[in-house]
Image (cartoon, rainbow, N blue to C red):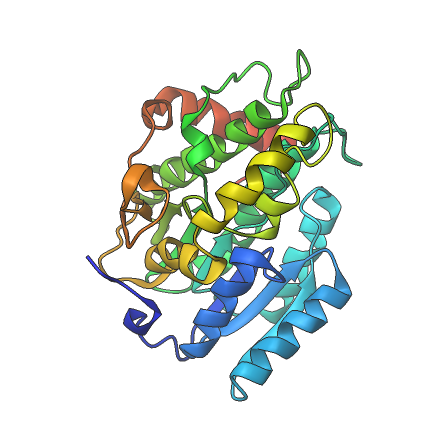
Length: 308
């Protein structure tokens, strides 16, 4: 199947919220949705990057409706404040794309709330955000939540007794676990939505091996693997698709009538590294229903946020 941004249905009148929308895959998602007519809210930590991203979208599409709102997913207070802004506007959300993340930080870091930073930013903040915005998603028929996962979700199993890597921090292992939890969250969200009649679809997507800042600057850019990464990235990065191509599975999950709740989408080429978007292989652990239910309950306790 060949699917491009030209296949995105009209998004006129729809509201899309994209975390990490100021750069990389998040920006490309916002740009494509705005081009299709959606009103887009770009959520991010950096005000200047946010203003720049909005200006670039408006320059490319003068009729676009785009704005930036500050959100630091590593802070549950920031998540709550961001959600309150949208809740006060009292408008239904058609699409929530949980995209923002950090990758393979060389050393274990702790957030203001006391959580390991990758776990907090990549997963727990998104869990809390989705819980708080669920009332607005439920107001729109056919609303979708799309979690951005990764090929790294298949690299490791999840240890529900050590979600924050307190017994031993390994950068890529911890990153892979957060991306597995994002996939598990999407699938468990779909199960609960169907059971409770929320009317919101939960989906997930991964970009394959995308050429974005999180790849070129993040993994092993410092620490023990820095030397190996500096040697190999000059060979690997030119082989990977740029963000405007790697974003297609996310856009497919977000907009295509062929994308279904509970689905996982990614590139369909060799080892899902790149290629046209389609159904992606789901790691066995992500299909573990009891583990997903326990993860959900643990996340509600840690985030202090419950789904209505």
